[in-house]
Length: 150
Length: 150
DNA sequence: CTACGAACTGGAGTGAGGTCTAGATCAAGT
DNA sequence: ACTTGATCTAGACCTCACTCCAGTTCGTAG
Image (tube, rainbow over all chains, first blue to last red; front, side, top):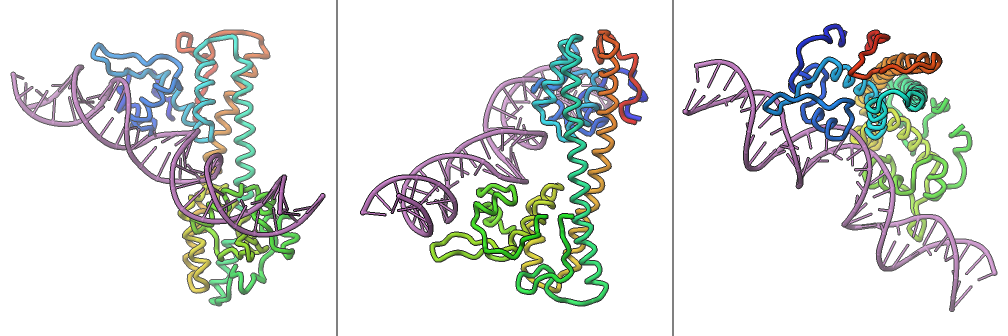
């Protein structure tokens, strides 16, 4: 899995981009925006060196982003973690609220899926019968229409 | 449900906004962008009058948008419907492709949910034990860390 | 040393999806 | 007739989350 070889040499920005799927642009952008917990180490020449911990944090960030957490919330969460122990209750509230949003989103998507599946079914049946006839044509009505919202 | 009283008087843009949850701005925007199937009727004075069919189409649009269909695809779909019978196979392909995307999205969200749930669990346990100790603090490591991606 | 790719910075640009403004018009109530 | 509130149009503006660019520096291979 993603964290199986966490304890390796520090990685360059390009390597992290490759491993996480984020672009190097996005990685610098996230850093500028304060979405990372620790300051990223630099080489003598100023290049970033990401540790396993940095990458793990990025993987969490990616999951949170993928599930729709806005960058502002992610930033807030990073700040809390950065400021160390003592604010775990707030971190929990933040994550818990997000979890609820994700669950609501899943439910909404499932409803969308069933509406779409119904519509796909209407077209598929229509095509298998090889018949034309104003499907959802305002001038003809749709005799097969049930209730799309149920 | 949303379509229980579809056969009523035509509605003003404000009434449609109220019933669909879209803003009047968004309704005009959708029309300008060609996302609607039929041209919306107008009163002598130029105000829009939405029929039940118009509203039904909007409700479908909302479900497709909610589930992440880009406006460009929605526009394409509206064009197909507008051009009447004969292109049902393409409509089906479009919807079917979208359905797959929705399903993939649901699976991705479920994975996110489990990662978040795991993290929520870590914090909850931590708080219930009333103990501090560098949770995800780079300087301390996280002894409870399993594999966040599984 | 020279070349060349990868990385650096700050800031401008992009695309999606609306949202808002200005100024005019319409329709209903008093 | 007057006032009020909803609607009209065209077009400017906004947020979000990046993405790209210019010009420069780093570091490794030949």
